Image 1: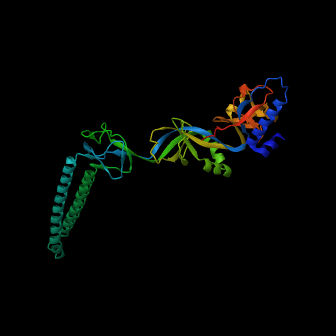
Image 2: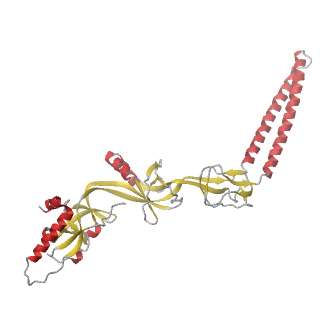
Image 3: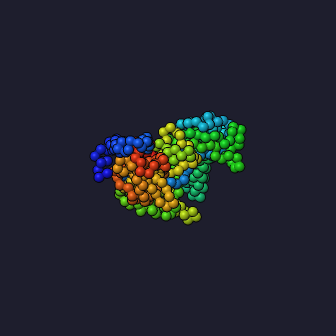
Length: 387
């Protein structure tokens, strides 16, 4: 009957009706008794909802691409043509390395090529001269074979010299280092004047990170991985996983505003740690996230359909027991024992003891006077789970 009243009039209507009943009850008391003002307390209606259960994993952020800028030839760093910590476009000139030793190698290779081409021209001329003589038996076959061999060797020498020249020109091109991708560039490890390209001097000059999308890598134990894999076989869980996605919590405990998705599971369990690496990606339109940040991944582990979820502040704990105050007839609170199955953030999932439609006191029940009615007020600050 109590629940039917709530359903008939609604929470606000029930509160008004309860208030009127309380006033009527007090007015019927002896006129000689002093009238006490009704205690005003926030209340909420018990409802059901699908409760998602998340598990938190610690991870670290990385750029969608983190590309190391390396010196592919050794030499003195001559110039740096960017501002550290800014966005650079793909193809932007970043560094130049002293070209003089590379130009000398190129000149030496060109000289070797010219010499090889001269030897090829002489060998070709000798072959053209000996070939008709051999046809008339004016020279021996042995002389002809030697001329042919000399010509082929000269051609190979030209090819080798040309290859050396190409390699020297490629190395000369490495003296100009450009951005391989568009992204944020970090602080330069060497400065102009440093000798680079060989250890112990810096081989990695800098790093460029593409951060319009950020990735987070985290690890699951073998048991956690198996449990999630088994749940993933359920279509209902898969649908819920798509709806809830993956949430990212930063070091300041704020939830990142972009929806994430799981895009990589490592091929194997690490036998040394018993964990497997997973990777989730998040859009990062304002570049708030940067590589190397501490991150907590909240991954949907399970969900409980049609559950009763109430704030923890509405529950009075006594050792292993839980109590709530349910609003009865004439707005008089009654103590009710409940069984809680799980704690989720600042809320409790109620396993038994409450029914949908009942009204509970959310806070301030320590002020209650047994048997006295209260003035119920709608609770305006119900905490939203996992947001």
